[in-house]
Image (cartoon, rainbow over all chains, first blue to last red; front, side, top):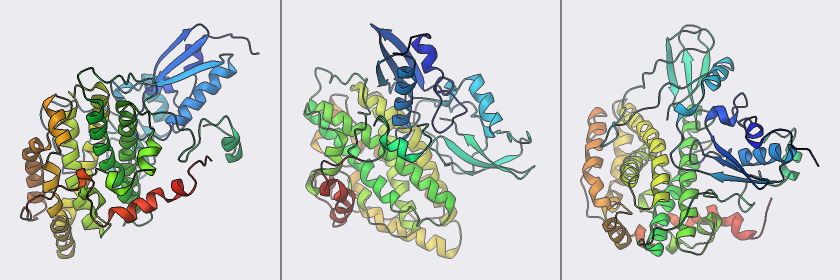
Length: 167
Length: 289
């Protein structure tokens, strides 16, 4: 039996994202709530994308970390509303992404009422190269190695890099 | 999962496995799935299956492009789009199982229903042709689905509303992707223009079905739960006109709709697709790994 030394929230906040391991689930904005009732911990997380295949791994990692800290009964629940947005990535999370060579997202699109406007040309975003800092970068693909990342390249230092795309 | 090796991952505490029938957590675990009192649960379930089937079958067609796409970035993009749609499928199937009171899970709906029980629009099952065919299909599908999901956000079923709100963000990227390819191919070389136009001409007879309501849709739209697809036509036409004009493509002539898919009447293409999709699950119905 492990002695409970830390509160459940603090434990859950140390768990990192399986695909962006430089970020905690808290920094990513995926960890929505942690509560304790009669020794039972209820953790609420929200998916980044509907098909995010890392959700099961996140649940397992949360249960594993909390059990290791002495919480035997852990229930990981899903919240769908409000939908996750990259605006929930913390300042610290953005710093860590950039440090790892992944450009953090800009502000998520604010959509007015009515039909969503179509983007026919290349998307122009002010994304800085995480390696050399140049703002002269271009998108090579809106879809990358995971649902949340796009591929870009820097026109100054010529390096390709990833970018957490805004949603 | 942060395992040191794959064997540890497979023999671990069993919560993080990656195949069908392996105890995936209910994707709606923890969500309040109470059906609002004046909403018909059977209708709501049927409607969730329609939208889920559209997404599953389209996702399967996209997955067929893995290792066949013209370039690596496109391969990744199509897989991502397919994965988004698969995620929407899982949520919608889970909602259906709660709404019809049977508690059936996503595996049941995906793997253990027959062809006549699938209610997807026939556009989604169009067999894989060339890249022009795919882009034409994806452009039409994503434009229609985006308009639909956006109108579902105020649905009186809060779960459906939440699923739609997530989906809108995803499908907006899918539509842009297909639209940008349509312009690049249509306004490209003579050959790419010819094949993009041929792709549109090929799938256009299936467009009318997208805007023809099934009686479940009509009933639920009346009570503010669903969307009457007829109301999506104006937005669809406006978006298509914008894309086709930029792409120097001709809009094919409309043909009278043949709304069979929502009633389980499909083209010859769905049977073989399901046979492949369901073969492993049906061969080993109790298997876990």
